Length: 431
Image (tube, rainbow, N blue to C red; front, side):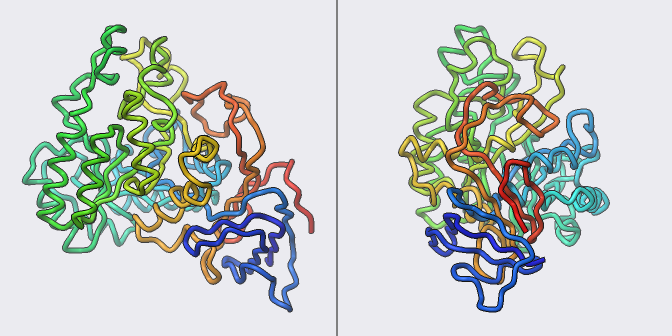
């Protein structure tokens, strides 16, 4: 198949391209950016006039719920939602059931993804067997089975010696470690940011320093071991400041935040809205401003979805008794695009945090439109409005904290290795 995308605004952060141009694809790869080759005869054309053509998005953290919780979502349903959101590569945390601590589970997830054919799914291997935090896993074996990085998901490794050995082992084999900083004792059974709102509502709080204390421990270990480490998703302004200083000092550390934490704060739980029960919790307005500032300065390298689809019953109990998480694949791009209208970042910078930068964090050859690379492409209409709701979301989970919001920016085409995997009927496609 030869495909010609013409008339669109091509934005490729990797090469600094931002212009109206053509993109030509043959088979799985991009063969030209700009004028089509003289002898290029396309089998199909896509008119991208008035739209943005950019690299397929790379999501560093998205739970697909399979294996183990298929009543909340499956690889097929959630990768279809990812394609609808312009995502072509996503990482699946290891807290599946069974845990992704053996090559068999890693292979199963990848085979399910290949069968669905919607997006590339990269499993994250367990840093410790069973996520128990007691000893290190066979990371090299898991890496050979396709695990792109290693994490203990939301489970803490309280034994610092075990964490140190795990990071040393990862560093010695040039493996990436993904860690979520939260002190388990300070967080305890909290469900909201510790502050005036949680006190008024009578909800147990999670203090901001539950994150920063753990960031301190992890940065110390990174300096000691030299392990390439990614921290996230983060929620506090102070943590971003600490990581910015560590990056200035040359530590191999990167960071990410969720799109929701850029637009929601503790105020949004004021009516006990369980859809806003997230981990890490929605913080103060000052923290939100700090996250935006860190993103604009480049301290935060990536915006992720932290997609966690839930079944209907999981969000119906009183706030603190519900299950945390948001269905966020399809709102990742439009929520990020709001930063452009609000003057926080330019459009190419936003696209970089959704594609090129997370690809660099993982060390994978995607997130670019350079000729010769795999044709993972997102085309979206930046001016199309749509309302978030059950009728507009593909994900099996309908638990979105922005349900009812009118968002601007809608994906019209998603290509995975040169193949159209998302193509609503409204798109202008002709042969």
